[in-house]
Image 1 (cartoon, helix red, strand yellow):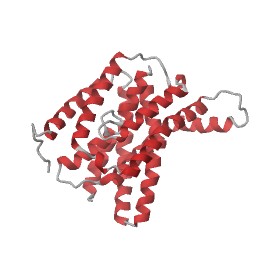
Image 2 (cartoon, helix red, strand yellow):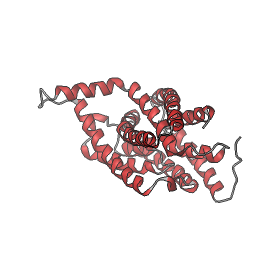
Image 3 (cartoon, helix red, strand yellow):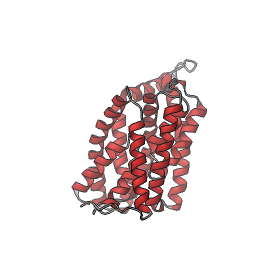
Image 4 (tube, rainbow, N blue to C red):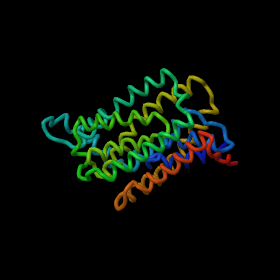
Length: 275
């Protein structure tokens, strides 16, 4: 894999991971719509790890407060700490995706890299996001979430294992359905990505190490680095955007992209291959 291809992939990952448009779907489509070969699941995971590193840096004050509160509760267990509650909410929301991801890993995931499946997921979940974002209340913050709310968001995250769905998109959709503010929904979605994608990253790193393919390891490290840089910029832009505006531009983009992909997938309209 050339460094230029890795940079392109990292740019796509960085831009699309935190926008509700499906980073995994775009990464798969990149190889289908260009002359580059498919980078494979392991490179996809490496690119996602770079994005998670960006989340950790951007939300470091929140994560640090969570760790401090977890330490404090050992000495004053009857006190209420927002950081402790956030920790448990993230744990609850992570469990469903880990279980479902393990099941898919057992049966294999390559069959999911399907052109038609991506097109339908991009379109339908984009429409769902638009409807929920328009009609839902905007009142709750992360501290207002209950355990069952975290479970619902976690179950929704399982759908993100299907390319084209968008992990951020589907978790934000569920959070908005539960009445969360847009920025709070996006923040919880990003924080939730940390344990989920780190677990996948550890497994992918182990497989690379066991395989002993130094070329793949080198490519993965480059992918992590470039993805981190692009992701930091994307997070900042996303959080600033949601101060004033809604998710509708992303919804419109998904509807247009999904429609074009399905027209191409069913042979109605051919998308030219980019060189």
